[in-house]
Length: 278
Length: 305
Image 1 (cartoon, each protein chain N blue to C red):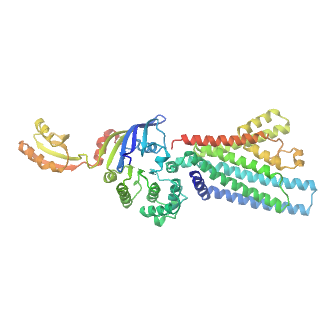
Image 2 (image 1 turned 90 degrees about the vertical axis):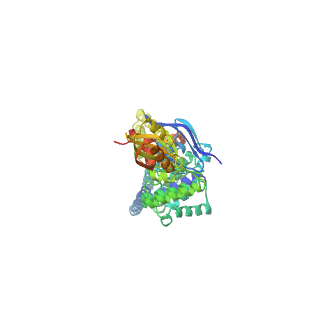
Image 3 (image 1 turned 45 degrees about the horizontal axis):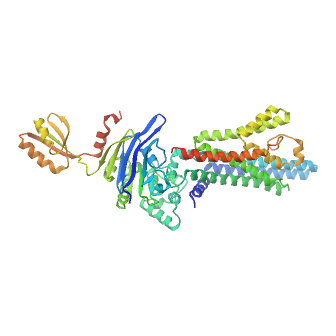
């Protein structure tokens, strides 16, 4: 097994026993329990008082998007916070000295941790999103649209955030890195809202600011693009703004930028850690 | 066979305004246990980190096992026990050693056999499957020692390996060092426990403010001192005593401190003094301890307070 995979294996093994992952798993389980309960109640209500076909579809789309938004949000937190001390914590504690004195490349350490935490984050999201999709499908009989496009976009958002968290850990202390990574996502979140409000109110300057913030921090635009694809045409035509719906659609070029951003952040992490004094 | 397992020339490292290592030049020969001594803040740990490529020197160069510092070929034959034994504490000792063995490319039965041998050797086999987070400091150090030896290294860096150990644990480390020496493994030992160093090392270097200021081959260096109380101790007598050793001090007008090769010269010194008509009141020989060497080499300016 190459050193990179050995380190990824250790990362997975170690993460499995960390309290943060246990807490995230409990939160995820609680969320799914709540969501399944809500889905059952919604389905029962619609059976008791059948709405129009259009209203029923809108209800189910909103329910599904709410579930996926929440699954995405929980995963965003995990992606940002789980690897936050992956490098900085081990550098500060001295664990890294033993690791880096072995015949392994420093890049293998960074990429191994990136891979290990990436697997955890992606698996976590797939379980939560799978739970949401299973509930809407099995309970309410709703088949979510365009998952083949939306899921990779949400995964890209998570991978980008977890890469930024890993990269920050090569230079920053654990707490600083946590604040920085969440701040990075906060900028994306605010940028998305500013852009949407600008679009709804016809305020070009707000849209421009929103787009600029999304360029600086592209994760939230991946969610908005995914949400756009998951909305049926009827909901798009309403043009409603909200966390689960999209009033303004990010450009497809933003996907390339987000992917490029991820690659740049990962390259920075490798170079930065190679130069880091341990 | 490489003659010099470490060859460092003019290594220098600063952290901002703080000069950690000024001009580190030293060699460690194959098969020897080399003690690296100095007060707190002398740059010992930074020196080890530079030799392991954990820290990049600002100047100078070094070779480890004949290869430039930091090459994977060199690191593959090196073991390292860091000062603060911190490992992934969710792992058991067996998992820790297995993981580090895999980083050395070891696999399968050979690795598992090696793990068992090492855990038995460091007396952790009974606790081998318990998480490290429940270990005492001494147990962690022994687990760390096992991971440092998993690749059967040719050179081992030990940074304060006995600081958390009880007397039996120290004895165990001393035995392991003796075994390593008998197998031709070189050891670079950084320790504040001078008694341990004296008992195990072949050679020591004293480092002060980032420079090696003195080196000593233990056992070969004249370290036997004779304190003579006699009268008169005038210039001709002092010059005459120089034939037996080196006058290293005058604690008083009637006292002289003479460094000699060993206690075999004491009868000759005594006979010579009496033959010169000197009144000899006291002649006391003692071996100079490493601690006394340390204090002498470091000077009073390094003493706290």
